[in-house]
Length: 200
Ligand SMILES: N[C@@H](CCC(=O)N[C@@H](CS)C(=O)NCC(=O)O)C(=O)O
Image (cartoon, rainbow, N blue to C red; front, side, top):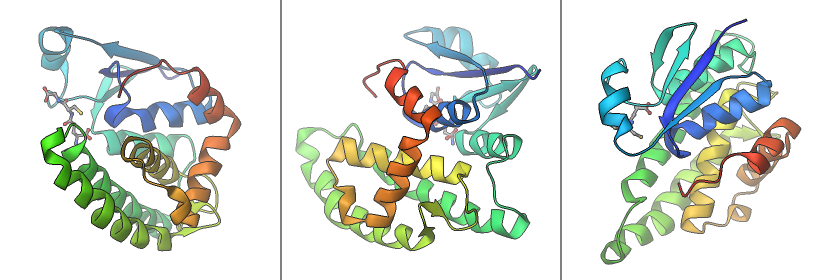
C-alpha cells in the first residue's frame, strides 16, 4: 500500500483541496499539521523548495499545491478521459488559481484597505466568476463528466470566496451547483463535518 504524508500548517490554506480529494477517494494519509516555530526550524529545511504544502509519497517529496492535487487526481481516476480533455480541465484549473491568487492578496487586508476588498467583491469576482461559470456543465468543469480534481479545486476556491468575502454564489447558478454537488458527496460531506476546526 502506498504511504502518503501531507505537510502543512494547522490551517486549510493552500492545502485543503488536497485533504478533500483524499477524503473523496477514501484513501488514508498522515495529515502532518505544524504550528509556531516548528515550520522554520524543523520542516522548512526538509522541503524541496522550502515551501508547503508538500506530499510525501513512499518517501519521495512532491511540491506545489495544484501539482499535488492533479497528481492525486490521476492516481484516484478523477481526471478527463484523454489528454485533450485533461488540457481543457487544466485551463479551468489555471483560471481558478488566478482567482485564488487575487483572493489571497487581500485575505488579510486591514480595515484601511476596504477599497481593495470592495474592488475584489464588486469587480474581480463578478467578472471572473462570470467567465468561469461558462466552463461548467451539469455541475462539473468541462473536460470531465464525473467529479474531477478541478471540480474539487473549484469547490474550495468558491467556498473560500463565498465565506470569507460574503459573496452570494446564488448569483452564479452553475458555480453554485458545482459547489453544492461537491459538498454533497458523502465522503466529502463527512470530512467537512468532522475535519479539525481552524481559523483559516
Ligand atoms: N505555489 C506554491 C506556493 C506555496 C507557498 O507559497 N506556500 C507558503 C504558505 S501558503 C509557504 O510555504 N510559506 C512559508 C515559507 O515560504 O517559508 C503552492 O501553491 O504550493
